[in-house]
Image (cartoon, rainbow, N blue to C red):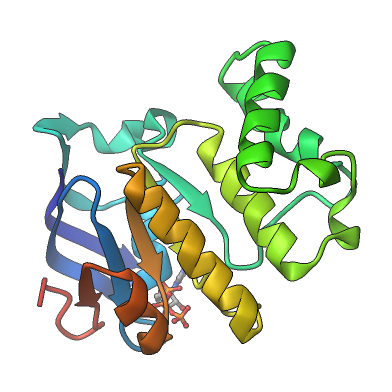
Length: 214
Ligand SMILES: Nc1ncnc2c1ncn2[C@@H]1O[C@H](COP(=O)(O)OP(=O)(O)OP(=O)(O)O)[C@@H](O)[C@H]1O
């Protein structure tokens, strides 16, 4: 279970979160909705350690995580809105780069793990392809595989359907529900309420004026 307690975050003088609380049960799919600029992406970035948290507590399975350690704790694997695949690297290189460089995983182990994930996500045939040659849906799957390389406790998706046509949107929904069946906790930032209602156990709204759980 993930508990955020009394989280506060400012950018300069601008308050994004002021005493924000959130509880997510293990295996749950939570959709985060709310107006543009409300802090949805910032929330994911903070949990992934890509953005600092000014104050508050992050508790995972009863352990209070030191806020400075979020970047190395692999709590949340991030599937970026625009995928952020390195254009000059193959799919396999995109997946193995960070685990080998920053996590000390051996290259053969990283490759084996990447291939297993690509196989599961049905993009193994693209392992030596460069991102430009992939379809939107394939990029999405590769981005998901890359997020899963670090064995995160939670997978966070930033607007996973925004670049996709309706058929691919359904495919992403299916992937999220497949991960749910595996017991993976997932947080999905989305503007798309129809999609949120389809995939989420809980929908949470973040609002810049009242960023308290509601
Ligand atoms: N690194 C940063 N420095 C300064 N301000 C930032 C930074 N990142 C985000 N912000 C500001 O914080 C606010 C929340 O941004 P965030 O991207 O989290 O919103 P969002 O809810 O995801 O919006 P959208 O739905 O438009 O993607 C915005 O006003 C944004 O301009």
